[in-house]
Length: 112
Length: 115
Image (cartoon, rainbow over all chains, first blue to last red; front, side):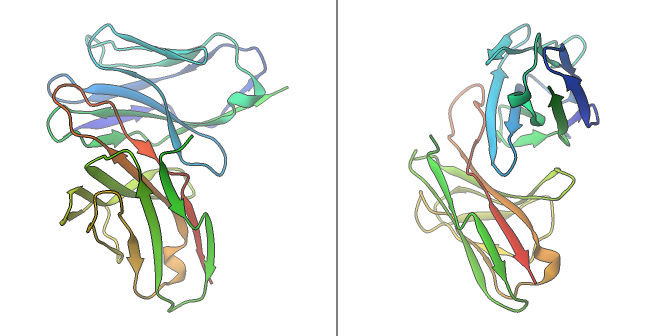
C-alpha cells in the first residue's frame, strides 16, 4: 500500500535559517504529492502540491520538487520566520480512489 | 477563508453523554472524511464518505458513527462519550475529478475533552 515517511521533529531553527524537511514515499503509479501545514489550534491547510514528476510546487516561499527517481518530495525554505512555526505534513494521493495518505508530521519551531 | 465548517471548536463534556460534531462544506465536494488527531500529531482516518448515503469506516477503529444524508453535511456522533475519546477531530472534503487529485480541504477542527 501507499506510505509516506517524513523526518521526525521537532526541528528548531533560528529566524532566517534555511529549512529542509525530508519526505519520501512509497506508491504505485504516479501519485500526487502535497505538503500541508497546521498552525497551533487550527486544521490543516494545503501549502503546496505537485501532480507529476519534476513538477515544483511553491507557496509563501516554500518549495518542493517531485522526484520520482528518488521517490522524494522534500520541503525547503530559504529563510524561515517565527510565523512559520507549525506542524508540516507530507502526503500523497493516488489517482484511483484519491484517498490521501499522510506522514506523521514534523513540528517546526523558529526562534527569534 | 474556510469553505468547510466545524462546530463546536471546543467541547468539554461528561462521561456517558451523547454528542454530535458538526461538519458542513459549501463547495459541493462529493467526498468527505473524519480524522482523529492524537497529541503526537498523527492523523488517523476514522470515517469517510464518497457521496450521499455512502459511509465507510476508516483505518482506525472508532466507536463513533457518521451519516451523509445531504452532500454538504457529514456529522459525527458518539453515543456515549468516554475519556478515551478525548482528541482533536478534523473534517475534510475533496472533489472527484479525472486525473490528478488536488488534495483535501480541512475544517478548523473540534477539540473534544471528555471528563
